[in-house]
Amino acid sequence: MNRAGAARWAIAAVLVMSATPAAAEVHAFVGAELIPITGEVISDGVLVIDGTTISAIGPASSVSVPSEATLHDVSGKVIMPGLVDTHSHIGGPRAADGSAPIQPDVRVLDSIDARDPGFQRARSGGLTALNVMPGSGHLMSGQTVYLKLRPAETIDDLLIHTEDGRIAGGMKMANGTNSRRDPPFPGTRGKSAALVRASFVEAQEYRRKLEAAGDDAGKRPDRDLAMEALLEVLDGERVVHHHTHRHDDILTVLRLREEFGFKVVLQHVSDAWKVADEIAAAGVPSSIIVIDSPGGKLETVHVSYENGRALEEAGALVGFHTDDSITDSRLFLRSAALAVRAGMSREGALYGMTMAGARMMELDERIGSLEVGKDADIVILSGDPLSVYSRVLETWVEGEKVFDLEREDDRLIANGGWGAGNPRHQALDCLEELEVGR
Image (tube, rainbow, N blue to C red; front, side, top):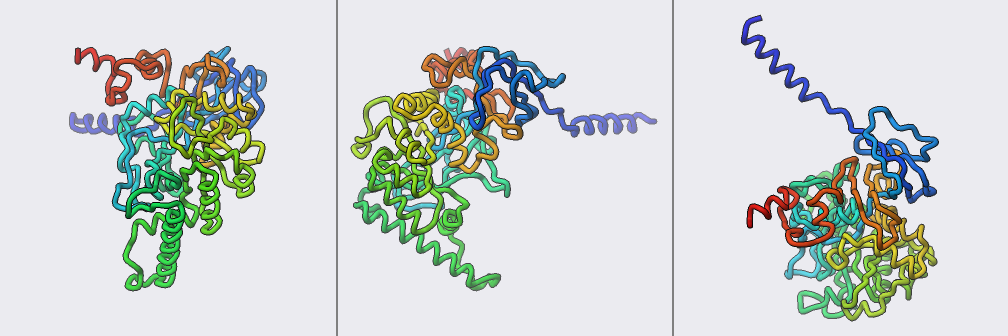
């Protein structure tokens, strides 16, 4: 073979090797207490991750550790599923503006900074999946986006996709005082509901025109991105995440949902304890916030730590959210602990931190519990998840460690301090960057 031929063979061999997929990494965690959420607690468990998914879970006596696995001795630790936050504002999202109270065509996806240090702060609190939303200053402020907290350089690295390839997300709506201001915004609660009704009726008419036109492009109405988004809501493809506080505002949301048939998750529901039976009867889930510091708006004056207990006893699905930065993502587990202190069951509170949120985001077949075949999103804790003394030691997303308290830069984010808010932290080593700048 001549020299040129040998070179071509060498290049071909390199290409073949580079095209061969790397073997999936296998990890086995042994000795920890496992909290599967959907099953009984396992006191001396084995959890096996194969690539991005959970491949085995059970007592040490019944689960064998694969010979090729990297072994992690986590004796004395606790492992539970990654936490799911159904309402976050991490990444500096901005969506609708002051031009109109209803803007369903706006996407929060287009305004999120994936390198914002808030994402690493969330990982340090054990969060692995988020619903990032625009604010509540509009009746409809735009499309939310569901994110996985993978290592990221761009927003595309964080996106969750549905089975048909769509970017997963919901629609943010609000009522009460936030969306009331000078025209063109509504000045009263009654006008707020009227504007929402009119928008959904307009979307129904848009659908009628599309159906009447059929395949005749000449008869089809001009494309309308706002109407397309509203039809996704009406067709159940996009869940409404509805900011609401007062008991009368909560009932207005339930009324609109009954009229138009959209799926809805009630967010905040400060007065949930007043109308828990009505919420349960409607079959609507609630994502509550547990704030352990004073302040807020007048319509939240009756918020109660007992919301979780009241909703649980009524039979409603209840979860939790941070509304970060209202509640710091690093302290998310505190919400469950405070709810239990106010009478909610331990099992219900832990379910609310994980599976309830997964169900609200329609991702429960992938996340929310430790089950074979589900995404390998896990949190390793130093102790009981409801203890104020417990720390998040490690957070894993889809089989990859994304937070480790033993790493100096991760510990800075978890504990706080000078440099912890460096927005370049995920792309550069925070401490080295600070040293260079001194």
